[in-house]
View 1 (cartoon, rainbow, N blue to C red):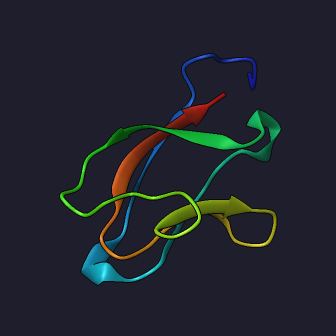
View 2: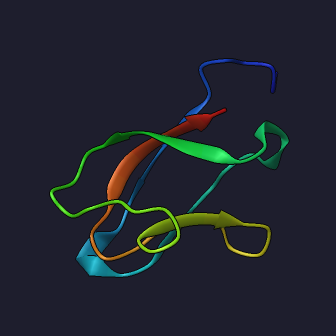
Length: 68
């Protein structure tokens, strides 16, 4: 169910390219809970979320995202 408090998605930018990852919109906006990459994960610059693209990462960012 989408009431699962442990919903998480790991999203990785490979080859420094923008990568989109599936995020169940029922959970609302994702938040970054752990950066896994050497490259910085900065909201709005190297990762973000919007209705059109969903969850995305860029420039080598790899991180775990969870619901708020």
